[in-house]
Length: 477
Image (cartoon, rainbow, N blue to C red):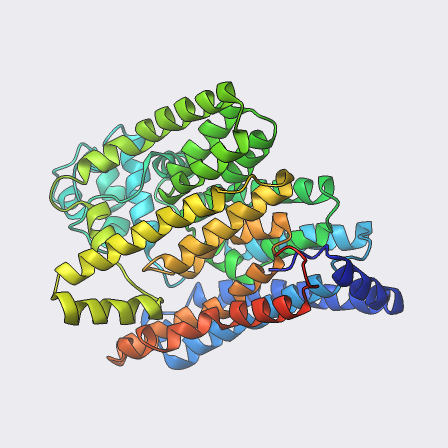
């Protein structure tokens, strides 16, 4: 990967920018306008469209195109103008465009995915003092939970719509706290979830902006996250809780640079409480804190205590039958063609069950190795630290057996904040995921899993190759 600040890149961009500053501004305004229009159209159409229609070829293909093309326009405009001065017009346009891309989703119906139904039930249970790890949704409907009957009656439609109703919750305590907050804002309401997700996205945007400005990078890079059509659709639109990851991770990395081990541990611990994988950032943070033993001790204690508090009940519940975490870790796989082929190969070699266990154990081992490898060399400054975190998060994403588009928020905000711009093009290819739905209806899901899904990584590979060719001999990558 080539950072956008290399001498050759800056010279080329400066030459372009000096020749046509108005053209660059026009291109960015046009890209932002296209992104805003695409989100308004998706909120209006898919928010009202019947489920059967959404799975039609024309609808899924249109969704993929409407997400991919504006994303490509945003990435292209930001890359072209990354070294031009940002005046108040461009900065205001980026900020307003990101807001306007998300506001149309408030009041819209569910958009393809159904994870939010589980969020609504978990939030209601936590708000009422009940544990979402004790009973499954179908048991709640049978009256076997601690929820009052009137609360169950109010949420009956949402509970009945939960996918995999025999499994107990998969989400750690940090996510559960946010679900409960959404329930307090608006019980059983998708818009309550969207309000929490929107706030998380806005906080992330503010942090990225401050990091870009303080490190001397172009604030336009904020658009790679805040004005990303795929993320706006998947996060505020579909209300995926992954949106809450980036802010605590960024806060932890800033605290690490300031030797504030306690804050770094608490922030990483909360991120682990949203999704478990940020625990793999611990070696990188520890390496950056070394040799400050006091900061290291505070970090370890804070991370350990927070993780135990937020994740202990989930892990404990996974030791019993019908645990969502166990089911996810052992069988979930989608949108990852290399893993699909490896799974088939291991099935032939080791047999059903055993082959899958071995393969997933290897994936976990590879993730652990990547975590340690990224932490081997001491990060160079805050930008280098965030860049390493972005690289690790991207590796974990591409190792994950399930590569849902919203999982890209694991690394896209970090990439935008660090200048690791080639990773941003991942959002261009990921809408290919939505072609899974008509293929599944036609009984052709293997066409997607064993072939078509591989195309979503093509933009990243292409840009990485082009960036490598453009990297001056001996420049760091």
